[in-house]
Amino acid sequence: MAEEVKQEPQFKVFGADKVKFTVKSVDSVEKLINVSISCDELKEQPEDIWIDATTLEAGVPTRMQIADRVFGIVAQQKIRESDCSGNLSDASNIKNQEQTVTATELEVHKEAMHKQRANHYDPLLTQTQITTIFHEDDFDFQFENLMKELNE
Image (cartoon, rainbow, N blue to C red; front, top):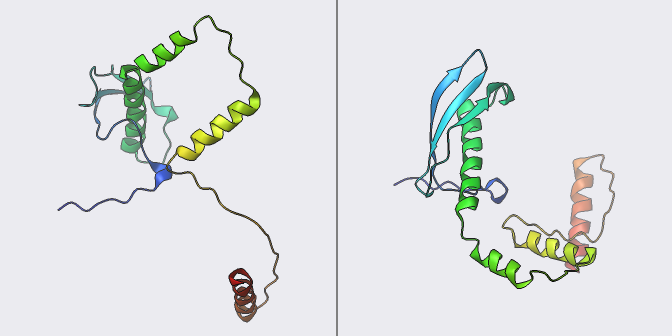
């Protein structure tokens, strides 16, 4: 049985579950890498891409850097292939009607959209206290006092 990989939400890759790519050619003179992409989740396969090797980071696995770009291309292709009939219908409903949106309305909307993301954290910070610790016993004492205050 395959071991399940725990994913941290801030590193979630969107666009596709599995993408295949093949390095077709490497041009050491022009410093370019030609990559073909294949993804079963797409209706139409994207065209081959050329990656400028000078834009890749040294010390980071080239395979993963190429994969990152490939997933980006696939995500864009999925967006282009997605059903946008609802958006077109909504736009048709407000066609030729002047729209007014205040900055506050847009800010509230952006905040609501941000909070819907899986990696949204909303910390509650109510108080800050500066403590000077000279010895580990001081830390224990301060920590115990803070815990008593919080529990009260």
